[in-house]
Length: 182
Image (cartoon, rainbow, N blue to C red; front, side):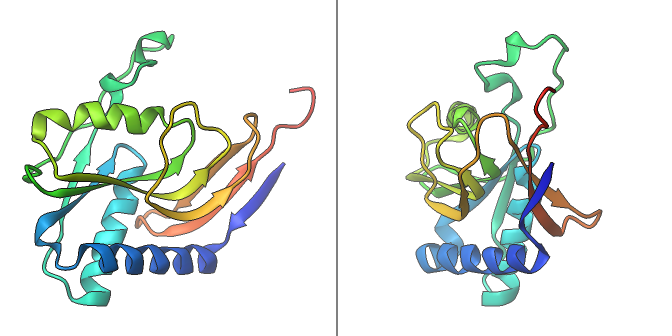
């Protein structure tokens, strides 16, 4: 069973609110960088940076793409071999304010991995977290977002998915509930 949490219009309104909150806190952007977490946080990070530049005529915002695959505490527990995505971290983070961006915050383990993965790139002055969806009652670690698009109460068996089109534009957010007996 599938239910739409956010349609395209609601996604756009949510993004506008996140962009406004980010701009309020980080303008001017010379001391802040956005880091999208591979794979699903990348498109959202780019979308936020593009909207900030277009809506607020900011200087170009530094955006990085960081893979956390081998920093996860569960990567050795999977049956299939994992392959890493390329990092694109051609930016300086030493002394900067870093905003991690991901689509859905679930257990918090991806963010813990991101905190480990960022260390070789320098010591930021601040790290914040921006997520489109916060599954707030599913946390396994004491990690909370700084910027939240929407909070959703979903049970562990439910899957929250962010749907993108081929041009990396948000289409909708859905929640999938398995039918009993599966």
